[in-house]
Image (cartoon, rainbow, N blue to C red; front, side, top):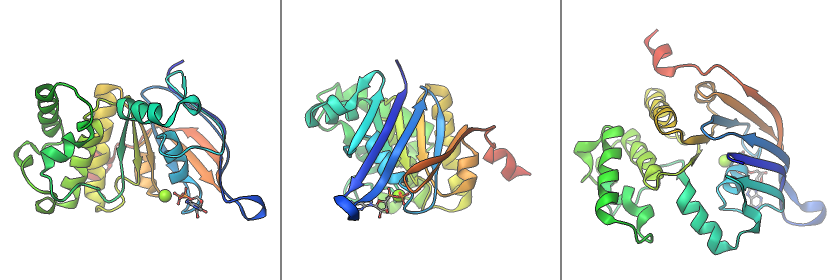
Length: 238
Ligand code: ADP
Ligand code: MG
């Protein structure tokens, strides 16, 4: 089965009475091509959930099946391989390497995969067209604005042609207008390439621009609803 099935996911930090139940029994069924937000207060378990979905963190118990693969059964090596083949990440605060120019930052996820270098370069150039920074490929991160850096981070998340992109507060450090543009860009990639997006945020405007909002509290799902996504660009013009 395609998509993602999460069942009875739990992540506890520490043991016994003092254990922190960061995730406390989450069930989710996500179809390919969905554009989802996960919202909740600080400490509600958003990042832990996303890190488990991205195979960066092993849950204490429960299962995560991605595109038919029960990821809990994979060795660490196989998890890393699965991750680099299927999943792209956009973190808060850009996380670009300051010593590399924008192009090399985008190519970075490919450094260990022996693939065709010319094809990768072409793909990167295409992505710079998509993020409208084709004229900035050789710039260092410090020579780019926050919004531009985050667009580069989005391109970096897409270089592997992932089926799934996970964003942890991807618009956390930019102004509202830039945030709207970034959401528009992610939406465009979602529509044009069928990439599934799961975006953690506490920005309710951003969440309103997604098709489905999953609400967490104390490591549990307290709301999971489909919605008509607000077109942020449209509402900004009004
Ligand atoms: P959010 O992203 O919604 O702010 P997190 O997933 O980061 O929430 O954290 C959920 C809970 O788990 C919080 O109570 C947090 O303090 C705790 N937590 C997160 N990471 C760790 C860790 N490495 N060790 C212990 N507790 C942690
Ligand atoms: Mg967090």
